[in-house]
Amino acid sequence: MNEQEFAELAAGHALHALSPDDEKAFETARRQHPDWEHLVTADAETAAVLAESVSEVAPPPAVRSALLAQIAGDTPAPVAQQAVEAENTPTAGPVKPRRWGTRSWFALAASLALLVGVGWGAVTVGERLNTPASVVALDQIESASDAQSETVTLSDGGEVTAHWSESVGKAVLVSDGLPSIADDESFELWFVRDGAAIPAGTFTSEDGTATALLEGAIESGDVIAVTVEQAGGSPTGQPTSDPIIAIETA
Amino acid sequence: MLGGVVIDGVDVPEDGADAVDHAGQLLLRVADGDQDAFARLYDMLSPRAFGLILRVLVDRSQSEEVLQEVFLEIWQSAARFAPNKGQGRSWVLTIAHRRAVDRVRSAQASTDRDVRAGFRDMDVAHDGVAEEVELRIEGQRVSEALATLPDPQREAITLAYFGGYSQSEIAALVGAPLGTIKTRMRDGLSRLRVEMGVTS
Image 1 (cartoon, rainbow over the protein chains, first blue to last red):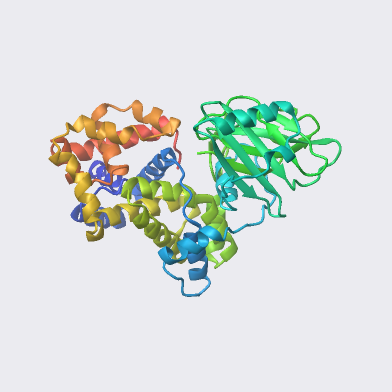
Image 2 (image 1 turned 45 degrees about the vertical axis):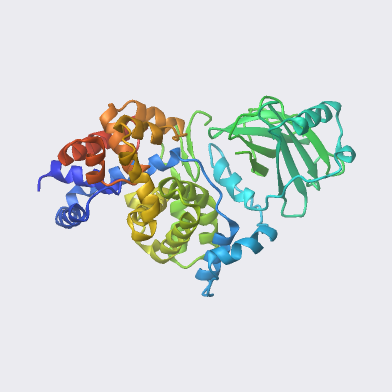
């Protein structure tokens, strides 16, 4: 086999598209030619990038708990049996400080979204509203046919619900039990879109509750995130700290 | 920093400096039996892996089973991850993709398989098949890179990676010789590597 033929097999192997016979031929040649290994590595890396084009889908929490039980040496129950109770038993994990630069908003959002997803239900909106703009926006969102909401529970018990409607183009964050921040700090809102953070305004809260309208229009697939920044927001227009809240709206 | 390419779990600075392979660092700890690192790796990559498996398999409950198998395999075989031979996240996603394809070709998946193979029975032009799959590609960077490929190359790669079809199935599907499909895949993948700036 020459290198060109091997390169064809390596490409088919990377896409997991070889026939069993070709797969055997590939493995044999691979063992004989360590000098061709770079072709295998390059193709595998390229194929894996294709995976980045697929939308993330949060798996059911039951898979996570089954796995953790499995590796802890316990005998896990089948996933299907755990699914029902898992729906009613949201797990909250700690939000560990992490450095981000051009970094993993989506991974973080995804892991935070595992914290809990609770429906909006009949929460008493009126008690929590602070500003007229957000009242108006929340009313608009709630009366839209495509109104959606997602609630996450913070590790210290706080609860934050994002309400949004793509047809209205607005998103509002209703928070209760926010951590207290210094006088010279603000909470800053962000739309995380295609991996980039877009500033969406700041807000403060004296008693841990706040209702904030995000500036700018929400788009499909945005992640709504909140960071703690210096008063008035990050001067660079980019987050300088870890998100304390990240909610996927997909 | 803003303009840098961002892939969750990997920092890819624009200046070409070495990317920080968070998943790879976690994998090294997982290889030592670190359960906390495993949980973090799962939280970081399971939504992406699950999306990928679901794309290939379609069936949700089977996808959940495969996801669990994949991460169990990662737990058991993390010691085989070699940091000098690639990124941790691609190592994980490669396993996820392979197991999804294995499942789609297995007997349990025969029903879905028939449905998928039904593209042929429905007499859909082969252009239509690739289109169908491509319509669901969201990633801008990848779809832009795919768009630069000649149609036959894009079709071969799309059907293989997202459709889970083997080279011989694709040959039958598009009515081209097997050798031609193999060449298209190799050329297409090489070109994608350049377009997407994949380094290894």
